[in-house]
Image (cartoon, rainbow, N blue to C red; front, side):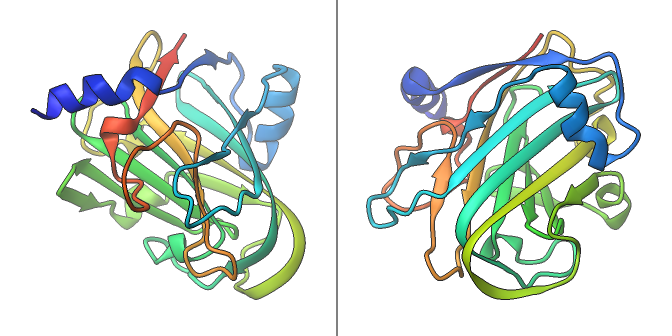
Length: 227
């Protein structure tokens, strides 16, 4: 039954070809420059899936991979920000938050990489209904940079621009044994949320057809083709 649902919902799912880069950034702050050199375009996170939450901040991402890791760069312009979660595996989704969900092998196990605007990371892996929290040692492997720094931010109104980058090594996929993504077809989605912001919102890259806001829905993941 679940496979039938996936087949039906993937009809309007998006697909994205992800380029391989020969060079590895020295640190997460260098990711934008590396992606600029590769002339990688941004993809919009602008699908408003739930009419009760119509606010649509400007959100875009770009993504590439190397022999060692996946590189991701988010750009956001929104009406206010908040960053109360100051530790990894905290409630980052309540803050100004960008997210990357991926099933790297296309199986039932997927990972949710959720970053608030000061770079705190929530990471779980597993099948729906059977999620495993990443250990501190795994979390420390994911290098991050954010333009807003790392200090807590009480809710701050007014148009704000911010960026976040992450280097996600293959070792971070702690339920798999992945040494390369070359030629793989994964599934995934990219999100922007802020559950406790003044204007809550729940945006996605690939559409979701559920009655209420929910990002943990791999049946609506798009196709990620690692070239």
